Image (cartoon, rainbow, N blue to C red; front, side):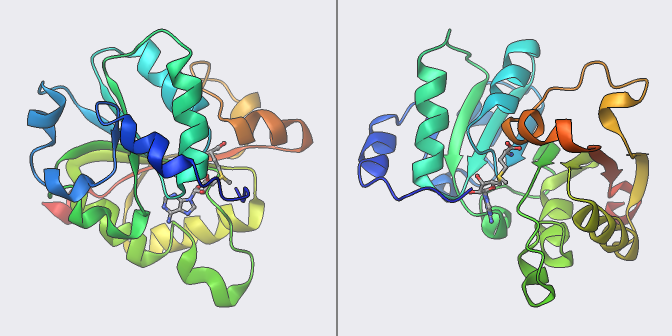
Length: 217
Ligand code: SAM
């Protein structure tokens, strides 16, 4: 998502200290303490405007959700949207880059990682930027609990195929691969993202559900 930089975004986010983590590395290994309970922690990396994580937090009050976004301008849109709704004590936001999440969360601290419609970086020379490239899988493997899941959705077929191969080469355990999320049985509780709403009329949505369990053991 490329938006014109909003110079008011960072000052706005800094004012929301109870809701938005601007320096999340300070809390490495202490997230349950910070969140005030021992409930599972689910993160969405590259949250965009927040529809998915807000609706998940509303549906599942016993799970802690953290929406993570690299760009302050985008994050501000999500936070402002949330502030107009009924407060959800189990939802927080974080401004951070996926690449450094190993410095933010300790090993085994996270129960679920969601990657929704991540940027596909179609040029081969940019493949290391894809959030399903091996170096990013290293990050997710380290922060996820042994039986924690990584759930990935995209409408981009080449990116889906690339991700399937990348995950397979990494040696993950596949729980589920779905080639048409909106027209398959068993996914009635699917929560749509902004991109999903926008692009699903034009073709199938692909979904992959994996864990790194055996590898962590
Ligand atoms: N998940 C949302 C959805 O499905 O509607 C947004 C999808 S948008 C294509 C990808 C989002 O990932 C953008 O908001 C972008 O700023 C964010 N992003 C890209 N690279 C990132 C990174 N390395 N770390 C965190 N967020 C990132």
